[in-house]
Every structure is written in structure tokens, then in C-alpha cells.
Image 1 (cartoon, rainbow over the protein chains, first blue to last red):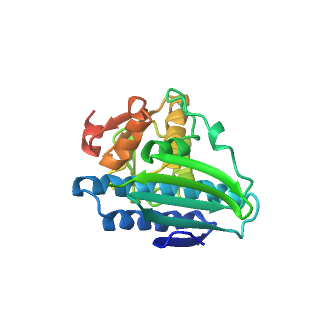
Image 2: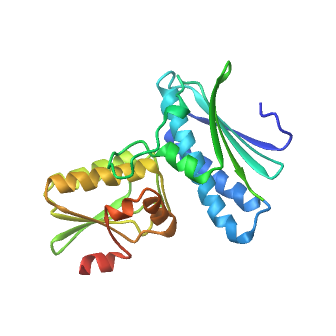
Length: 141
Length: 110
């Protein structure tokens, strides 16, 4: 379970058709937060993007282990920070080893983590006994 | 991937009828563009006016189309990018790579 008192917890099947759903929740959350009106639209877009990329990654990694698995997402707001955690049960990956893409290269893959890093303030990935978690934080006030 | 295909003069226009391109439908977009090129289209224009959101996999699908078009000496242009979509191209500097037009009309008159 999520540890903070105020949070949203979402569990979706390991299926990409739920990306639209989690992206829409992220946008709606941004619209409910106490942020400057002129920053709300950008925040909604960035949360949608970060969560879409993170959940797509989690589905990709989890599916390799068990197609019947699910992806758990915790969204919480505390001390003017929004925390988004995405849990997966796949083999995991080394976030520190994910390079910044060479933007002059025209590869079709490898920009997802770049986008997350671009729109969030911090990104961490850790392996725990109960699975892997990608935690993204963003200051909202 | 809902899309309308239309031939206008020497151009083949693929109008994407989705508001969102992500890992769920980007593979379909990639295949649609590839089949269009394999079908002999010489100048492809992707109309993205209805697309409000695109993720990294969607950009990858469009890059696939761009590279395939280059291999076949076919034109490949994008039109009607909404602000969020445009910002994704700018963040990755891909707006320097693609031929991008503000609208389909301008792409067709280019």
C-alpha cells in the first residue's frame, strides 16, 4: 500500500490500452491541484507524459516475466511535492545506466526516460522485495 | 489506429483520427505508414491535427516512416501539429528533421 495519508492508488492490467486511462487520471489530478492557473495545463501534460512513459515501461518489463501481472501506480501529494510511483515485477533495469539520447541520432526507441527526466524534477528506480519502483517527483507550488 | 487515407494529386494524405498516439497504437501507425509506402506512395503527408498527445513510441513510429520514405526516395511530411505534440518534437529536436507544416492545406500547397 502507499504510505502517505493522502494518495491515489491505481492498479491496471499489464495492457497498453490502459495507458489512456492512467494518462487521463494524471491530467485530472493536475486540474485538481492548487497550482498557478497558467501552469496547470503544462503540469497536466507533463504528468500525463511521465505516467504514460513510466507505465509503458513497466508493462514492457513485466510482460517479459508474466503477462498476467498488473501495474500499480501511487500518486501522492505532500509538502508541495507530487510523487508518482510506478511498481513493476519484471527484471528491472539500471536507471543510472540509461543514457541521455543523442538527439542527432534517429533511433526509434530510447526517448521514454529522457522525457520523464525532462518533465519531472527527480527520477529514481529501485528494486525492493515486493518489486521494482520508479519514483518521479515534481514540485507543484 | 483509425486513419483516413486520401490521394490528392501526387500526395497521399494519412489523416490520423486518434486523439492520442502511445504504446497502444504506435505499432499500428508504423505499419500503416510502411504499407502506404510499400503501396507505392511517393509523397506522404501525415495529418496530425486531431492528435492531442504523442509519446516516445509515437515519435518512433513517425521516425520509422521518415526513414522508410527516405530509403524509397519518397517525400514525408507532417502537418497540423497541436502545441503539445509540437513540444515533443522540439524537446527531441526532431522538428529539425521532419518537414513540418502548420496545416494540411499548407503542406499540400508546398
